[in-house]
Amino acid sequence: MLATPGVLPPPAIEDRWAFEVKQDGQRAMIYLPGDGTVLVRSRSGADITAAYPELLPLADACGGRPAVLDGEIVALDDQGRSDFERLQQRMGLAGSPARAAYMAARVPAHLMLFDVVHLDSRPVTALAYTERRGLLEGLGLAGPAWSTPAAIVGHGAQAWEVARDAGLEGLLAKRLTSRYEPGVRSKAWLKIKIHHLADVVIGGWVPGRGRLNGLPGAVLVGQRREGLLRYAGSVGTGWSEAERAHLAKLLRIAAADHCPFAEVPLVAGARWVLPRLVGEVRYSTRTRTGRLRHPSWHRLRPDLAPDDLT
View 1 (tube, rainbow, N blue to C red):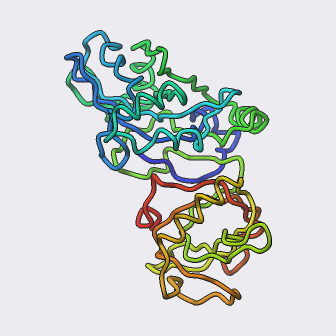
View 2 (view 1 turned 60 degrees about the horizontal axis):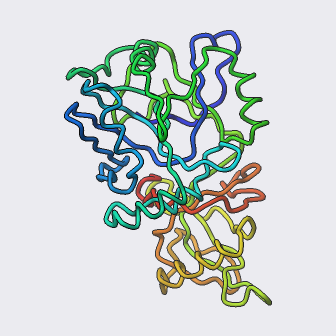
């Protein structure tokens, strides 16, 4: 079940909603057959169990009760906040168990559990959020690499202020009566981001000058609307030196002869790439034509494909 971008519910009805911290990690479904094994699948359905060996002891955490759990795998910074850039070092290692074990010791992953969809060999998706939440909390899932973060009912504005002051990405608001709808992006779950963030597709770049010679000075990004990649602006800030160098390698690999945007942007010195790299940018507002104002780079999104943004 996926959340829809939205805003805080009005104070008059906020007691009909629960609020959770929005984690910045990799969504995962956890399958616990009750036979001492565990299977971890990504949002795409891929088996990523081997990438996170610290989650293997979770197999016995339910005391043999079969369950399917929903959660987010994160890597925490030194202030206990989920940090997607740190987690990227752990992603994509399912095919290399030795490397995964090596990285687990250096960048530990943590599973934040927030829902249960199957318990004791029966689906519980038809139950209300409050009932499912009660079942989840009743499992007592708190371990060295997993936990069940708190959810509060009502007090949305206060929760948002706390999340903002803590430097968190945002909140998830979930209607107390909502069922679990697999594969649905539902308005019963709202994701409320502290900053304006947008997922974009990189379609080109402009070489930097001086010390940035050979590196991207800016990337040209777009968003899909009506089946076409529409130009959304130029992003030239927000990278560390290491991120810029890494991006330069990816851009060279994806080099193309033709502009992928529906309309060729008038950008001097532009170089085009195949529209397969997805990134996330921060921005202040949008222009009437859909351009992002004051965008800055946030991160690459290797967990998303361009088609996921349609």
